[in-house]
Image 1: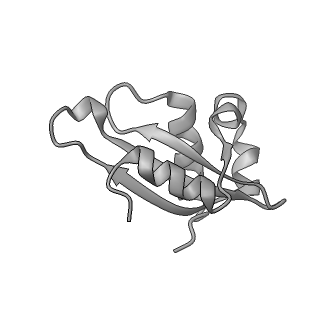
Image 2: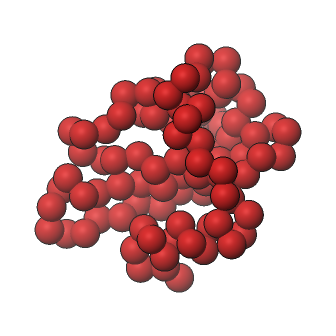
Length: 96
């Protein structure tokens, strides 16, 4: 089991979750949330700087595309990424 974000990202890419959904999050309308679902997520807290806390979401599309989205858990959060995750959570688009 991975102890940090870099190890977890490497493990998930090896499992086939290689697409970075950040671009879609930055340009997405709320419609894209209907095509995606969160398969798994994991938060990482370094314990020293709250600005370093992140959550990595594993996402699948209805077309079979598998990837990830990394979201900061601090005041530096990207509003478009947060909006996409919020839409997926609000629509119950979470597995497991």
